Amino acid sequence: MNSIESRLQMLTRFFFSPRRIGSITPSSRFLVNAMLESVPWDDVKTIVELGAGTGVVTREIERRKGKESLMVIFEIDPYLRNVLQQENPNRLICSNTNRLCNELKRLNIPKVECIISSLPFANFKDYERKVLLEQIRNALLPDQLFVAYQYSLQMKPLLDQFFRQVEVRFVPFNLPPAFVYICRK
Image 1 (spheres, helix red, strand yellow):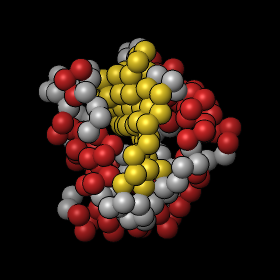
Image 2 (tube, rainbow, N blue to C red):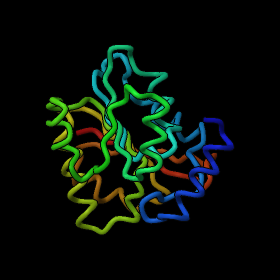
Image 3 (cartoon, helix red, strand yellow):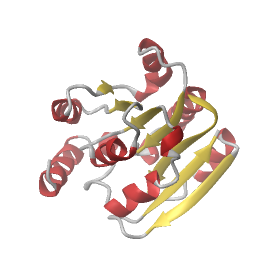
């Protein structure tokens, strides 16, 4: 999918469901790089992506991960999920991030080394955020990474409650500018 198609798709899906999609445009290459540069790719055997959207981050994860590494993608929007599946029929794609641990068990994956998220946490209710962060923490192996971006610093205090270390990086070259949270369990 080219850049223009990706942008049009994202904009269309946003208008259908702004609370689930969370952005009118895909992440910039600057944001994607800021999210993925802290991942120790040689050590990652299993990676989970939450909120894959049009696949901008997905394609870069696939480019960087090892050939033997397993990737599990979560996308709630049925249209976008179908597009991601058509792009690569071998992808493991799930729909509901609230069932993260159950889905991983179903796939016979006990724990993972890294979780990358593009989910719009600001659109979730407080209890939904906490439930999801608990799922994320439980799915990670000890001392492993959860990386997410948001458009504000609103999530920092909550992430501090769930992870022993939270680093924040500002990415001005994105529409809108974003904050990348690099969290270690």
